[in-house]
Image 1 (tube, rainbow, N blue to C red):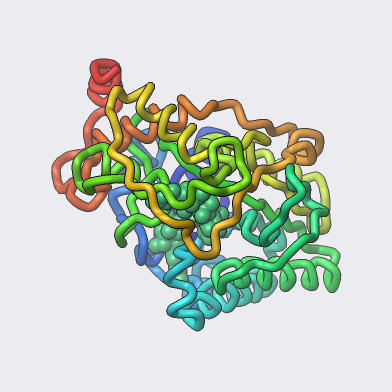
Image 2 (cartoon, rainbow, N blue to C red):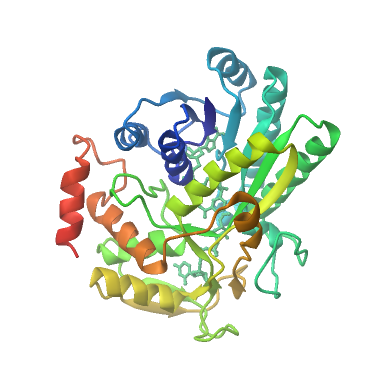
Length: 356
Ligand code: NAD
Ligand code: WQD
């Protein structure tokens, strides 16, 4: 059985489903600070099986110890954490406590329970402001520029020390680039509790009329159209990469890091054009100054994941936008306001087809 921390969240929910589809049993631990329990029955509906789930905090050692006793857990996928860059600047202790302290607590409980296989959600943010593209796993150009990024780098360093100190550990560090999109059913997607800051969640609010215009930060970057370039990756591709990583770790001891990205960079304006093309919705844009802390461009060299994990992203930018739009239309306010019954997969698919 796989313990999925943060499994009610955006990426964790898709990974929990991918695990079910791969035949694994899943227990989710999530304190719902940035997610909804509504995700759980939807994972079960799509996976066709029950998921065990516990409401609780990764910083609660007694709870973790109970979980490892109660369930036959043999590996952990660790998504739980806080991820808002701006908030991390204002509340650094909260970020270090949850992201670093929570990860240390989890590893201590794992070792106590004799469970040594861990997949950790890291981020391309650990590479800092790099000018050498694409970024491979050995690239060392900078340092993260905010407490969120630092917390990911510190956790990576803690895990590396752990891997060196005790050869029983099998640790996969996955550095995600820019996860976007949603499950094609329209049942799982990103449902942040706070106002969106990231490009695609903000864009979806504008497209659905909940926000007036999409800010486009910076038009003077050294990129083809002057806007920032990123490696957007479909969340279902990302989730599948976790299953491949688990399979790898079952064969290999030690610690290894992999980039999960497509290897392609798209600008803000290219992403907007793709969204308009697949949705038929025209987006009002609000051209602004550069956003502090943003890098001009960032995309992955995903060769290592292909060669070692046998994983490659399959879904293109249009698919990412189409699936994100389907999710938004089916869940205009995210999971929260769905006190109504869960819509059937068939009715959502029909609705999505109708929307083109
Ligand atoms: P998310 O906020 O949707 O999911 C995180 C989940 O963790 C949420 O369900 C939240 O309720 C839960 N959680 C937070 N603190 C907790 C705690 N103390 N105990 C138990 N549960 C807790 O975010 P996501 O986008 O799914 O991100 C998942 C992981 O991937 C995070 O570690 C994030 O830093 C990392 N990551 C995300 C991105 C991205 O752009 N989404 C990029 C790189 C890395
Ligand atoms: C993408 C591009 C913006 C919003 C962040 C974190 C990173 C990782 C992924 C977790 C940039 C532009 C954005 C808007 C815009 N998270 N933009 N208008 O900054 O690449 O990465 O999420 O690990 O650590 O920093 O993602 O989606 O915020 O921005 O023009 O309203 O869109 O300037 O070029 P980012 P993003």
